[in-house]
Image 1 (cartoon, rainbow, N blue to C red):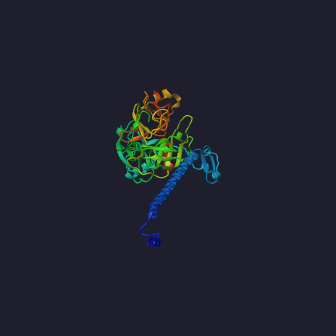
Image 2: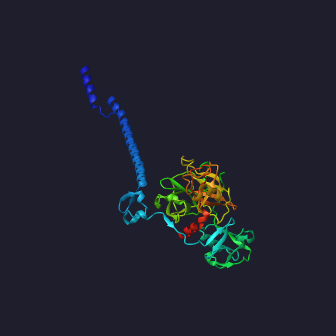
Image 3: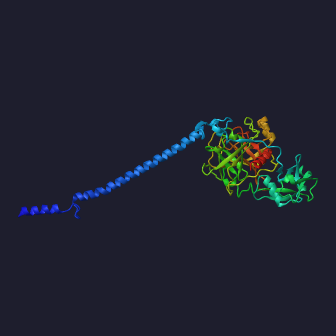
Amino acid sequence: MGASQTSFQEAADIEIPLNSNMPNAQQKLMANLKPKAEKLSKTKKIIWILMAVVTLAILVIAGYFIKNLIEKHYYYCTRSAKFIPLAKSCDGNIDCFDGEDEAYCTSEFKANGTFPVRLISAASVLQVFNGKTWRTVCNDDWTAQHTETACKQLGYTKSPTSKNVDVSTLQYPLITGPFAAVRSESGSTPVHQAATDRSVCRTGSVVSLKCSDCGEVNHVDRIVGGVDANIESYPWQVSLQNGGHRCGGSLVSSRWIVTAAHCFNSNKEVSRWTVMSGETYITSFGTFSVDMIIIHDQYDKDKNDYDLAMMRLSSPISMGDNRKPVCLPPKDLPLPDKAPVVVTGWGLLREYGKIATRLQMANIEMISRNTCSGIYGSLISQRMICAGILKGGVDSCQGDSGGPLVYLSSSSQWNLVGVVSWGDGCARENRPGVYSNVDDMLNWIYEVIEKNQ
C-alpha cells in the first residue's frame, strides 16, 4: 500500500503544470531575479546615456575652445576655404580670393571742411557757418520745425526743444555777434541754408537748443582708486569686445559710439567686434553687432594724436534707465582748472593688477593745459586734455581706453568732454591721465554721423 501511494504522489507531481499558482522554490527565485535584472539593465542605460552626454559636452566645450583659439590667430577665407594668419587680415594686401580679408575693416574718414551747424558755450546757443564766419542764430521767426531740422542735422531726432536766451546775457564774444536769422517758412530747409545775416536780433534773443534727453540719469553713485558703480548711473558706458573686454566707449545716440582710435591698432576686422551695453558686470552674452568702425584720418599712433574713433551698431538699440546716450558738449564748454569730472570703465583696478568685472567710477579733476604741458612737454597737443589727481591714487588705466570722461553741466546733463587715451603708468604721482579732447574734434564727429546715417 505504501508503494502505490508513492507512485500516485509522483504522478500527481508530474501533472502539476510549471506555471502553477502554487510556485515552488525555483519559481520564487526566478521571480526575484527578474526585477533585479531589469533594474540593472535600466542602470546600465542611464550610465551609457550619462557617458554620452558628458562626452558630447566635452566635445562641444573642446570645439568651442579650439574654435576660439583658431579665430584668435587665424582668419578663414570662406570662398577659397583656407586659413591665413590673422595679422594678414585687414593689412592692406589681398590674401583671400575676391579680397574678402580686406572687405570689412576699419576705415578712415576725413572731414571735408567745417560742419555748418553747432552749439556753443554752456548755454548751448545755436550757430551756423556761412562759409566764412560763424553766426549766432536769432530767435526771430524761429519755429518748432526749425528746432527739429537743426537737431536732426546734429544727429538727434528724439525730444528736441528750444528756448530763448537774451543777447545781453551772452559772454564775449557771442554778445557782439555777428548774427543770423531764418525765414519762418523755411522750417524743413537745413538751417545754415535758410539763415541770412543780421547785424542785430530783432527780438533781442537767440536760440538755445536741447536736442535730446542725453546725459540725464535718475541717480548718481557718489578704475584705479575708484569705487564700484552701477550702469544706471552712467548708462552711456559700453564695453567693446573682441574675444573679451578690450576697450570702453560712450553711446552718443541709439546707434553711434565714441571711443579711441588706438583700440583698433591691431584689431581692424569689424566683424570680430561686439558691444556690451546696459550691464554693470562684464559679460559676453547679449552683445550687439557692429557694421562700421571709423578712425580719425589724422590719427597718429606714434604720438597718440587725434586718438578718436566712432563705431556704428548694426541696428539702433532700445533705450532705458540702464542705456542712455551721453551729450556731446557744446563748443567751448567752460572747463576750468580743477573742474570736477568723472571717469568710468572696467580697466585694471591698479597698475599691473586685474581687470575689473564690475563697472568702476572715479571722481577726478581737470588739470590746466599749462600744468599738463609742464609734465608731459611736447607730447601734449591741442587734441588732448589732462585730468586726474596730481598726488596720485586715482586714475584711468589699461582697459579703460576709449571710455568716457564726463562733466556735469549747469543744465544737469552729463557731457562727454574726453576719451581715455594714454598716460604714464596708472595713478602715479604727477602723472595725470591724458584724454582725447572731444571739443576740438566735434566737427569730425558730427560729419561722420551725417555722412553715415
